[in-house]
Length: 188
Figure (cartoon, rainbow, N blue to C red):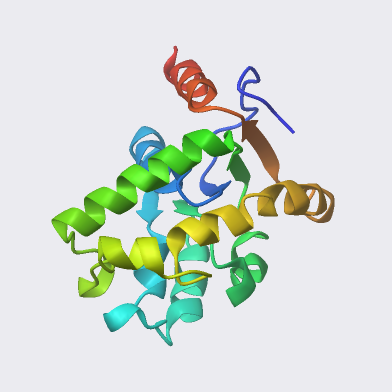
C-alpha cells in the first residue's frame, strides 16, 4: 500500500476512489479526470433514478463504463454488486482514510448547503429537508449512514489488497496529504 509520499509506478487509466461518505471522493475523481484525461463517471448518477429509486439499469451501466479503457469513479454500492464488476478492471484505488471529525464537518456542510438551497442532484432528485436530516434516524439519514459505515474501508481494504494483487492502493490519511500527493503528480 502506497502513501502520499510514494510515487505512482505507472500512469493509471482505471481508478476507484474509496472512502466514507463526505470524504471527497467525487471531488477528487473530477480532479483526477481532468489531470489524467479520464472519463469521470459519477456513480450516484447511475444508481439514483427519479424520486431516489434505484435504477434497474444500474449494474448494466456499471458494466458498460467498466468495460471501457479510461475512467475514474467513486467506489460505492459495494453491496449492490459493483465490486465484482469494477475491481477486476481497476488499476488504482485511492483510499481517502481521513479523520472522522474532518469528514463529519464536510458532510454537515454539504448536507446543509444542498438542503437549504434545494440543489437538484442526479436525475432531478433533491435531498430531503433539513428537518429530515435532524429527525429521521437510521440508514435513511446520511449522517447516521456516515457514522455507521465509517470503519467499512478499514475492514475491507486488507481483503481487497489480498484478493486483487493487481491493484495499486494509495492510502491518504488527510486532505493535506491528498493535496501534497496531487502536487507531486503534476511536477515535471
